[in-house]
Image 1 (cartoon, rainbow, N blue to C red):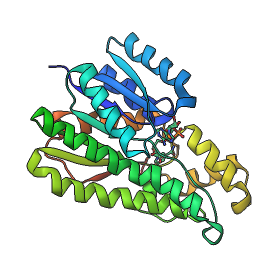
Image 2: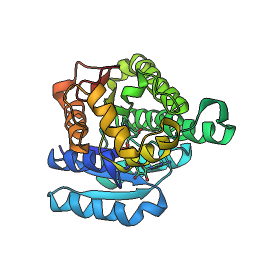
Image 3: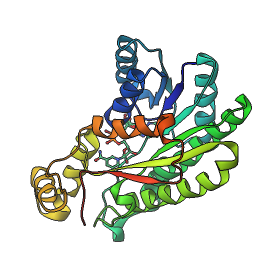
Length: 258
Ligand SMILES: NC(=O)c1ccc[n+]([C@@H]2O[C@H](COP(=O)([O-])OP(=O)(O)OC[C@H]3O[C@@H](n4cnc5c(N)ncnc54)[C@H](O)[C@@H]3O)[C@@H](O)[C@H]2O)c1
């Protein structure tokens, strides 16, 4: 039977690469993103279809519980099944700790952390309704293990994703659901470009200098990742070859050493 996946925040970046990889793997792929990304989302669906798979774009805000439940239900009914949930949507927040305000903390946690919880809840309930287990895969980061100055709330949100991934794996094991996370390092997406711009003033370096300095000093393989590098790990975590892996937050970062 054809497997079905839902990937959140997949109109661009790592989510798009995951959606395309899963299409190559033969999945039906639904993707979500925010309404202003609809055009890009529709393009991703065309790319999925050109790979011979079925795609479906859903406008849904990952930080809204009801929209995540609706997106999962829509995916399941559209493709008559549902096996794999990828909680990918996330935002970067660069701000000195001492000037972080409630709004920025709330927004970052709402998307990066609460969004993962809504995705876990919605997927687990749907798997249960369908009478089988499934796979849940969350976006963490090397910053779910390491502190980086001026990225405090982003780091905290990713430490939290790592924690909830372990808890969810324990709570959902009896339902035959595995829960894991991918932890990219620096990946060539708009998020990295924006982070470079935002950190430029704080670190006194140009965005290009930030990336090249940290690449040289911290990345064993000496280069940043492409989104496809992350998608390859997610492809494995979605496959039955990874059935005995759960609760893990797995590095895919070119060997980042802090
Ligand atoms: N790029 C990196 O270097 C890097 C490193 C480690 C972890 N990550 C994580 O990987 C994930 C993807 O990152 P990326 O680099 O592709 O980011 P990106 O900014 O390039 O793309 C993120 C996508 O998510 C969408 N999105 C944002 N908020 C959303 C919301 N509330 N609901 C639905 N969609 C939303 C955006 O519109 C965009 O299409 C994120 O969780 C990020 O924290 C990225």
